[in-house]
Each structure stands twice: as C-alpha cells, then as structure tokens.
Length: 120
Length: 186
Image (cartoon, rainbow over all chains, first blue to last red; front, side, top):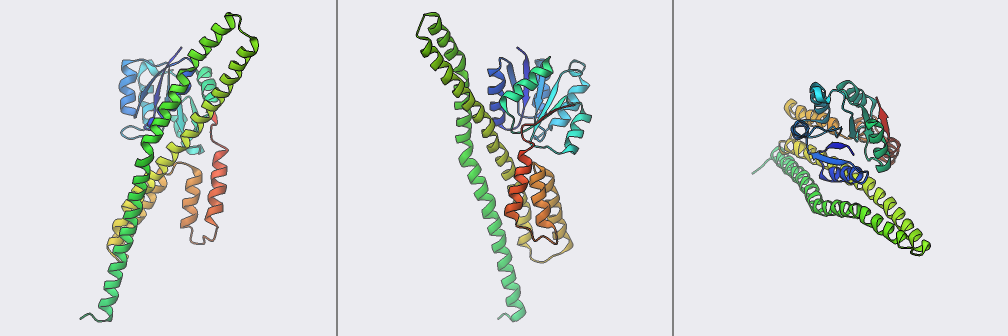
C-alpha cells in the first residue's frame, strides 16, 4: 500500500481519484490546490503525487517544480492528470519534472496500472 | 425634442444596454445551472464512494459463503454480480469526469461573458473597448481546456469563416476523445 497525494480543485475529481486508488488498496490524501498540496506533502510524505494542471493559487506545474526542489521529492513519481492533451503542455510538464501525463477523463483500471508501474 | 441624430444615438444606447442585459442574463443563467447541479453531482460522487467501499464486505461475504460449502452456483452468481458492479463503478468514475470538465468550461465562458458585457454598455468602437475585447478573447482562449475547444474558438474568429460550426465542434470533440484516458510516461 502506498500513500498517494491527489491534487485537484474539483471535488468530484478528488472523489473519483480517491475511489479508484483506495479500491486498489492505496492510502489517498487530497488537496484542492498546489499550496495545500505542498503543506500536506511536507507533513505526510507521499510515495506518489497525482496533480491537475489548472488550479487556483498554485497550479499543477508550479507544484511539480516546487516538489522537485524538495530533497525528499526529487525522485518521487509525479503524474499530471489533466484535460490538456497538446504536445506543448506535455513538454512543459516534462520540463517541470513530471513523471507522466494522463489525459482526463481517466480510465480507472489504466490509472491503477500506471500508478503500479510508477511505484515499481 | 430630439432630432434624427439624437434619436439614432438614443436607439444605439438602448440597443447597447439591451445587449449588456442579454449578456448578463446568460452569465447568471450559466451560474444558476452550475449551482443547481453542483450539490446533486457531489451527492452522486459520494454514492459512488459508498458503493465502492462495499466491495470488501461483499468479498468477505462471498468467501464465507464459499467456505460454508454453499452451492457453487450461488458463489458464481455473486462473482458475476460483483464483476458487473465493478464494471459499472468504473464507468461511473470515468463518465462523471465529463461533468467536471463541463463545469470548468462553463466557468471560463461565464467569466468571458462577464468581462465583455461591460463593453456593450458603452457603444462605439474606441481603442480602449477593442483592447478590452481582445484581452478578454485572449484570456478566454488561454483558459480553454483542449485543442478541440481552441479549434472552435479559432474558427469563430477566422475572417473567412464559413464552416458549419456544429459539425466542426462534433469533429473537434471526436478528435479530442481519441486522446482521452491516454497515459504517457516521460
């Protein structure tokens, strides 16, 4: 069982990521923006982070950059979960330090498989 | 008593105020529609969470039944029901995400309409008004969620636009659907 931090400003999305990953046996913490996620990430070290891109206060790619600055998150898998499917945004995500890019709406089975792959 | 020019100016002013009110009406109707469905979708999400949480209890029940020497057909029935329930749950999880996406899209549209409605209040096409519209358009385009939405936006503003936007939107949505759920590792 891994501890996963799910970050999305939409309550419905947080619920659905939670349902999917809890059913797969993971412990899920959630945050509604990058600021809240950073605070949680400091208090409760996560094994994997899944983040949306467009959020108030701190967006997802800024969160990825901020996490990569923290020694304990230098190698932690970070998946970006977004409606954006364009190559430009993906390149931005890669440059920020994301591990992978998942286009919404996610398929639960495939998300669980992707998380499993990241966690090794 | 107004002369012809004065009456024309008055009509123009009334027309501008009506346009502003129409836009304001659209903003608030969008807002109302979003509020009306928010609570219901939150409750739907909670129901999905609860359904998912029953899975371990059903599995434990099935194991007890199997151990008690119950009819294997009954156990197989439970397995079949469980499989169908999990498939339906997965479909719920996947499809409820379209609501989230629609809400985001409508939210951006609402802000866009609110920002351009002020321009209607002051008739004329001064540089400042054009700048406000251009800024609102650029911001709205930036906030759009997908290439499909952006392609519809771009076609509307193309000077030679003669396309049937309904079928363009359908094609664009279909193209975007192909990317949905894809996972790419860097």
